Image (tube, rainbow, N blue to C red; front, side, top):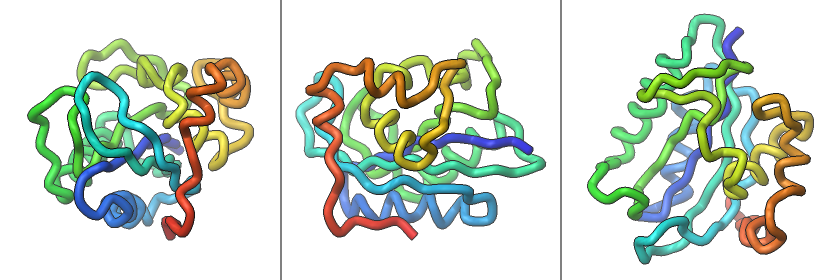
Length: 163
């Protein structure tokens, strides 16, 4: 069984619909989905807040490259373009982890190289899977180690539910 953790986010257009489209795309393999959180954008480009969530999916037949293909297909379906690094997005789907695999492949580094420092990944992941572990460290410990301001910047989005 291949279990993938996908971080999903959007800050353009109908953000909740974009996130829902990922849940719908992986529904045959869906294990868990986090609540939806609102977060400030990360990086140097001025832009609107993001809606973020975590999706956990499992498939006997999926390799890490298959999870990446599914992530890219979901982005394409949402009209994602890659024009500005750290710029606004209709949808961003990152493969955070697949099982406990470690890979330095430049196409898909596992686990995601910056996941352990990103509150917008860790807080939703902890909500979806309280016992989750990233690179041998409990996600709960990684969340606790983040600066309070970063943790507090990941806020539940009232009324936003992914089903």
